[in-house]
Length: 439
Image (cartoon, rainbow, N blue to C red; front, side, top):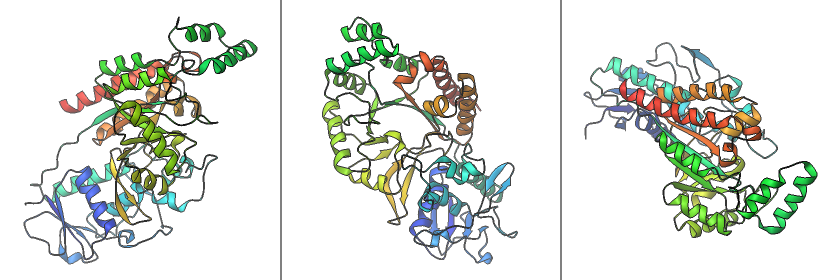
């Protein structure tokens, strides 16, 4: 086999192999080999302390040849507006140790080091290097990997760098499948009473209870038809956990919910939206997966954690052991952007076990609630921000993933005007795909 590029090293490690595959294979789409005996006729990256070997010289920082976790000496610089660290000496052939840089960012190395957590035990965006240095909205790993591709092309004009491939995915979380349906007579009667007391909408509740009116949170036809109009795939995440303080779902075995799941699964991909109450407890998560599998009559291989309850590496170890193949939790609650500095799916590297996991992580760029509840954006501000995220993702050939809720697309009360944002998102992501194919 003729390789596109070779990487000269004196020592192979799991970390090194993972990072080289991420940068050269996953992002640049090149075939490569890692060797201590470089060949003369293959473009060369010299990743060693021996400058006499030739090729593009990158001096290793050292993190890829270590085990365990230690505090890193990170000093942020900028080049053409893009942040970097693990800078190189003047004689190097590239600006940074891209392999160490990519490893640090995508493994979420800093999250193992920081004891800082929010009230729900999550690593907060405000604690991240990207937030502190204002590059959370930049997929820095993709950008610097593509710049390495440009450097390879300059030194080796014959190398073929594949074109960037941009794509998009709409994901929908069903925290509360229905506002009134499936809640039972006692809960709805209690709710009806409270509507009168608190000045709610008792008439609407009564009409929904009797079937005279469509349930307020039943926005599924709107979601499906709009997505279809803009050629967007949909991935639905269903919750099947028990009710609790942070879990407002209905009984998964209620007739209306089972009917909804089976209707949507006929046409769309689905995953489990594990409950807050299940945490990282394998037995509880397994029970929820089993419930959804039984109702949908499908194997459940995809997950998103409710409230983004992600503890590294425990969460990923647990769900992998339960047969989950793909996780969609990687992002922040209060901020939009690129939590791992990357805009594409990638394999999870377990820093505790020092091995590449079989679990694929699919990061998302934004969630509707982040804009409306936490950032307090009005729809026009959200549209402007989303357009920038889509363009940035398209420019690096990434996967644009958005999170919406059926409850945020009612176009009523605090969500009035947000259907416009939803439709703009789907239109803009499709337009960007068409534009890229025409460039």
